[in-house]
Length: 501
Image (cartoon, rainbow, N blue to C red):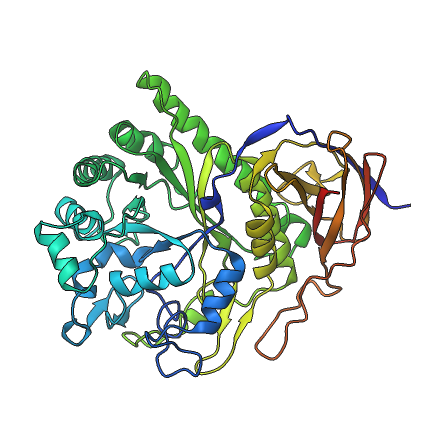
């Protein structure tokens, strides 16, 4: 007899309207993300701008609403002026963050053109490492001011008449990290972020700004950093950032799949800090969260040590993901949705080739990694209102966690389309989990499909030669008299879609 989990869904048990930017991603000038990833002139699939159409089609399939650019550690040494104007006149630079050579063939205008092709907005980062207030305000003027000023007219002279009106901006990247170019203390960063934010908004009062939080929750400065930075920037920013990567270093799957509980705790901690500063300031606004780097990252770290310094676009951070990674990514997406009231932006890091759902072969095909599917399913079917399900599930203990629920699940209700989608991971290693879900509140609904991602080999990967880890629609969810029943196969990602008859 398989174990049982129960769930109750009500239309009125709402967490929040989901900000579509929660399904964002990230493209950094790193490895083959840009050169050989989104851009490969001479490739059979390249368009007149050198952008790979096969990659564009896959990004469109993911319906990515927002892409963070151009970094990442890269941005802390980047002069944005190097990437605008005639390409032949752009300088080649030593790129110190990843010890490569940056050709600057792709810069702001080229990337904005690519973003338009994939129907994504851009979350633009400014350099607060080697640069500062001046470069930040000038970039906002270049991108967003209509005309009649030095930098807006410079943009127009580069062939871009209409301003981009970029709405979301990051105030630097991971400034708490000693590895960062221009690493700062919390007070140093708080001051420069406050002043940069101020003048950026004087140029364009409509923009939204993300202050740098900790580069991960294990930093010795965590919590103190957030509080100090927000103390300086509370009046000027809308978001504080979170970054976190996970890996199965000990090869213990039950512990690995529980890491989303740590992510949940991280989010709650940062909300608490933000609310403390709000109280301290007698403030009226909530500081929301931008989880603008999250993913699995651990497979490629050894091979990256062998890269020849100062090469152009070497293969870096090219994790090849297996089936168990897809399950954790699914759990992490569910965790983000559970906090849709405060997590308004999130960026899967990254999008192409670099710890990415999409991989390309030089001069060859593009293919989908295992993690492509949970990301695509939530992005496509997870638009609407995040519901707060009442769940009871069997639990287990692992090396680092107690009371890990076998069922990790949430649901999204799209009133406009009259659709309800349940996302669920069964963490059980041995057997299927019987789910009973009370949805009597959703009268006249029926099961549209039950998508399942499962594989007997948890280490199975996809490659250019074939993609054995792909979802099927043969799940057994059925609905009778307002009760949905389904067996979620052992170690599986499930998407149960319901709609009005």
